[in-house]
Structure formats: C-alpha cells, structure tokens
Length: 130
Image 1 (cartoon, rainbow, N blue to C red):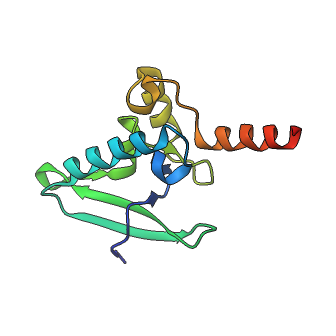
Image 2 (spheres, helix red, strand yellow):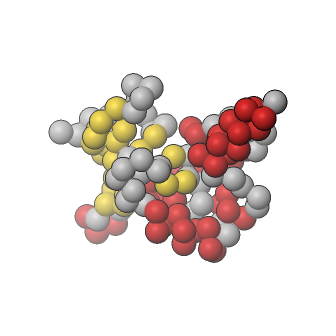
C-alpha cells in the first residue's frame, strides 16, 4: 500500500545531505533538495515503504507523475543528475545509473566528491591510526 513518507532516503539512493555531514555535504544537499523540489512541483508523488533502515527510517521507493500517464522513479531521477549516490545495501538497483552520472561528471560528480561510504571508511581508518 502506498503511504506518504519523507524523501530523506529512498530504496537504492541517498542524497548527500542524508549520507554524511562533511564540509561539502550542505551545499550538495541543498542543490539536491532544490532540484527535487523543482522536479516535483505540480506532480503527484507516491512512495511505497519497503522496510526500515538501522535508524528506524522508512526505506521507500518513490514515483512521481509524469506525462501521458507515465511515472518517474524519483531515485533514478536524482541519481541520473548526480544528486544522489546508490545505496550500497541490497538491493543495489541504481548502481549503473550512478556510474553513468559519474562518467558524465554531473552533479556531485563534477567535482572532487567522495562517496559517503568511502569517506566514512577513510575517516574510521585515520582515527584508528591515531
């Protein structure tokens, strides 16, 4: 059954502001939020909760109304524009979309962005060395 949920996390994708707080995450998250708001303006949105993450947040797949009775997968839309990264836990449904955005250097991939999971691993490793 469809239910309304916040768009802080979708199954398969995470926006920069969701993932980790780094010096760059706030402007990247702001850009993702602005793009998503613009995209969703005037569209209906349906989110279907799939499960909960380890913090108790609903993991949901969201679709926005498109033209001619079509729907647009919101996670795929964000990923294709470089406003999100694929969520590494199963199911890894958006990995190829992220790879395409990375190759095209769009959104976060236009600069020196580090995936949140890699950033956290690097941070943990540097803490262990101290």
